Image (cartoon, rainbow, N blue to C red):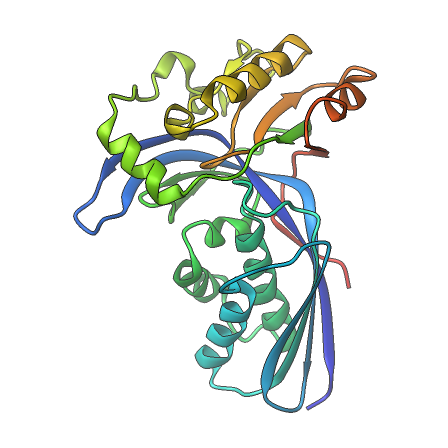
Length: 289
């Protein structure tokens, strides 16, 4: 087998809004959310050669516990009934445990890179089936852009791309247990998304005329850091964001801007632990070589 190497940029995602609807009989929760890709990206390189086994090396972060990229490679090889030596290199830019789907994006990139190395052996629909086995966010990360997600996040409906906007991401707290936060939501009287404040109803007409506000996210109500996260959201709105909110189950807060004011990023970096500047993106994974 000839050695093949593919490198891709795996984009993070934010949730423009997120409503946890109800707990299902299988223990999962139905949600209503709008996924949006942003170009804060990990660089994922996948080398395939003769042999057997999977190795993973990382730069920029130490990944502990079960690794989704290894699972993605194993799942792909089992599906196509092939063996190979796969070396995966991750250059991490997306912060860990941030509500930005960094691990899911990396796994999606591995699937795409492997499929390219094996001559496009699997269709997009087959890749999406594998992606769903890895996690509810992985199918979206494979597709990217702007999508409505329902069910546990696996029922995806493409939406018009919202356009190119500047994005500020602020990760200032440690991530809480997502399972615990779901339990809190089940036991709290949390309001649901209303049509009046829904981003979804503005998607087709565009977001340029949306009334600036903190977007609905059920996890914000269950967060130990709710007060400070809302304070950051309000600050971003005061500084010109037209939408701010919590991404995923947190702890990262985002702000969408038509144009970021001069000096704002430096100001934020002086006050918060981790601040990232990026842009919205119409794609999730970009093959670069």
